[in-house]
Amino acid sequence: MKFTKTIEVKNIFNKISYKYDFLNNLLSFGLHKLWKRKLVNLLEPSKGEDWADLCCGTGDLAFLISKRVSPSGSITGIDSAKDILNIAKKKSVQKKNNFIKWEIKDVLAINDYSKKFDGICMSYGLRNLNNVEEGIKKVFYLLKDKGRAGFLDFNHSTKSSLSNIFQKIYLRFIVVTISRLFYLGPEYAYIEKSIRNFPKKNELIYIAKKVGFKKAEYRTILGGQMGILILTK
Ligand SMILES: C[S@@+](CC[C@H](N)C(=O)[O-])C[C@H]1O[C@@H](n2cnc3c(N)ncnc32)[C@H](O)[C@@H]1O
Image (cartoon, rainbow, N blue to C red):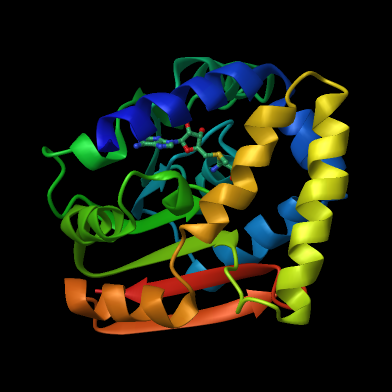
């Protein structure tokens, strides 16, 4: 069952990779860029620190962080889908940025980077992992003591709340309808299903504390459509 989800998710992101940035900009009206900046601002990466962008996709967060930690620190973008990571690599070449290290890896299978990073970020990645708790445990394992991590994702709001109803309408009637024009309807329909299985804010905080994080804070964005979880080890 778990194995199937990993393969399914990898196939989805390989398939949509060629339109990923274009559709992200279109479907979020460009707002995803602001939210990613907000996440990075909250995390405050600084010169000389070692960072990882997990489930990096086309690498938006890695590019933002590279500006903050270079030239003495490091930033590694990690993703399990080859085609989407290739787009990140192409963007690196276009931007003449050879500072970011890109690695193709299943985040949940990393077992050689214990306490390697000062900071870890993940946007729209945690929800796609086979097991959210295992994902948070992995982040704990990868962080140095006192390290910090930040996750940006859809917020799983309370059923029947206004925010929940709006999210469903937006995903069904805007996201799926537009992505169908590019023959990617089923792939984008997956978002709603994945939010249903994603822990709500209090559950995320509970899991993080259980895993061992000293501090866990959650804030919502855009009337509860998105959420940012910030953790300190
Ligand atoms: C929705 S995309 C987000 C990409 C990017 N972080 C962004 O915000 O635009 C989710 C990414 O997670 C990656 N992913 C899903 N499961 C993964 C896993 N187990 N290990 C590594 N990457 C994974 C997918 O390949 C995909 O690129």
